[in-house]
Length: 341
Ligand SMILES: Nc1nc2c(ncn2[C@@H]2O[C@H](COP(=O)(O)OP(=O)(O)O)[C@@H](O)[C@H]2O)c(=O)[nH]1
Ligand SMILES: [Mg+2]
Ligand SMILES: [Zn+2]
Image 1: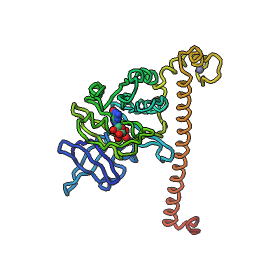
Image 2: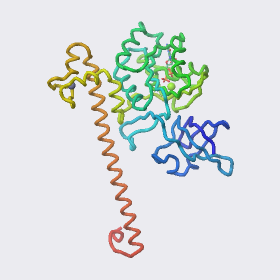
Image 3: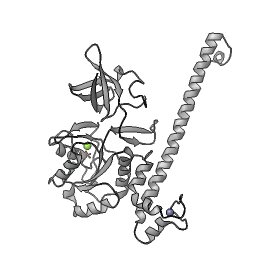
Image 4: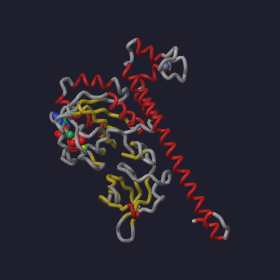
């Protein structure tokens, strides 16, 4: 058997890099349930480490996926399992925010929360710095909403900020996220030093892009390390990111330690240190609002997902029960439900 790393997953299978070169594995060749012992339903995703076993005809099958050290999850309404793995074993999550227009702090806070929740270090990259009147000011403003995360302004047109970013990503596994049109693929190409990813033409009117990047690919960087490009993620949920949200809002959490009640909701309670901080101008009302909104959204999504999972389990139980009853009927000729079919 040989170790490999998943670089790309599509409907029929996945591609991996091994020390013997690239290998293609068909999903059909992988028996269900053997791949990941901790969660047999989770399909492979870019960044996964795998054990490959040879088949007699020279092809390969997945023998096992190793437990994920970190994983960037994307949740959203309608996903039955609650969340989909976007990238596994990532050290850094690059959150791309375009300076083509004034950045929306709430959008950055959301993606940075997901990055912390993944177990990775978020790095906020303000792209298209050549289009911003004062990129340094944008860096300062953004830094206040993402404590603990480095913020860099980068332009692929002028090359500004690229060496600093390359340094941050060297020797690590990184994934680039952000809305489409943010300049993710252009950034990936600049870091790779070649035109690997297709770049979209944005609509000049609103600076939005189309989804040109349709798959997630793990690409080796020239200075060591690997980079995973992703299609745009805009309306991504925060299910399961509760701790990530609290980390993103470390400043709010710090003030909250002074609240009289430990379960203070920071809305109208007496002795609320967070509201006091807003009053004194030490914390922006917008920031407190964003904190409460994301936590509320997470709680709501979690309750919906739990309900869906519970419903799924009930269905599965009923079905198993029916099969059991049919077996009993066949075996012992017990009358009952099967007669009524
Ligand atoms: N002015 C300027 N435009 C950029 C820069 N980086 C990317 N773009 C443009 O932004 C558009 C979207 O880029 P793309 O990389 O496809 O975005 P993605 O959807 O996030 O992958 C393209 O038209 C790029 O040429 C930059 O640093 N400066
Ligand atoms: Mg792209
Ligand atoms: Zn409070």
